[in-house]
Every structure is written in C-alpha cells, then in structure tokens.
Length: 126
Image (cartoon, rainbow, N blue to C red; front, side, top):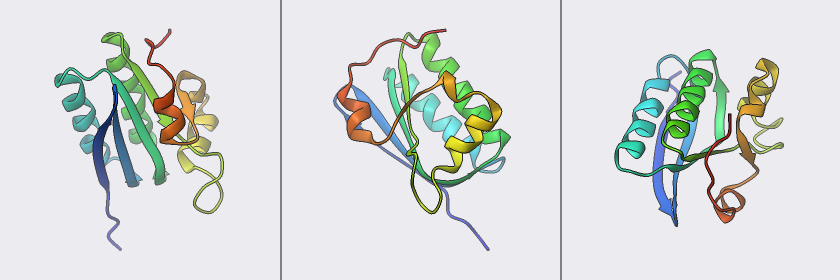
C-alpha cells in the first residue's frame, strides 16, 4: 500500500500555514524539513504546522518538528502546531507521540488554524 504525503501551504496574515497529511516518517520528513527551510528563507518567521491529518509520526518526524522549532527560534519567530485532542479515530497521533516522548511542552499547541493565527505572534521561549 502506497500512502500519499502532502505538504500544502498558504499565508494567513503574518502567518505561513503548512498543512501536512499522511505519514511523517523517515521517507517523508525531509519534504517537511525543506518546506520549513523554504518558508524561513523567504523571510517568514511566523509558522503554523497543521498536523491534524498526520496519522503516523516516527522519530524522524519528531526530529523535524524539533529542528523546525530550533530554526524558527533562531530567527526570533513563532511556531505553532495544530494537534487536535480528538480527531480522525482516536485523537491526534502526533499529539500522543510528542506527549509520550515528553517533548510536547516545547510547542505551542492549538486545536485549529483559526485559533492559532488569531493570537499575536511572539518569539519562542527557551
């Protein structure tokens, strides 16, 4: 079975929103990493990653999220993740993985894009 992986993007005010769907793993994580780098290279430092349609995430995917946080933070930017508490079948897989690894606290998490872009962007803290 071939699983499609997509990263689509757009601008919403001061924010760049990247919507990610499919499996975020060793094979697909470089695509997301490159898209994040492209956003930052374009001078956009307010980034929302909508992960509500990601149904699998391995350590490579978590590594990309942590690297994205580090990159945005180095630019005095702001990174927000969309990780709905309930979604698909049993809640966000990414949310559960980040929680299990103890790194969820590193991220500003929102339930949907509208609430993430409504708050003013501020730099990431330590």
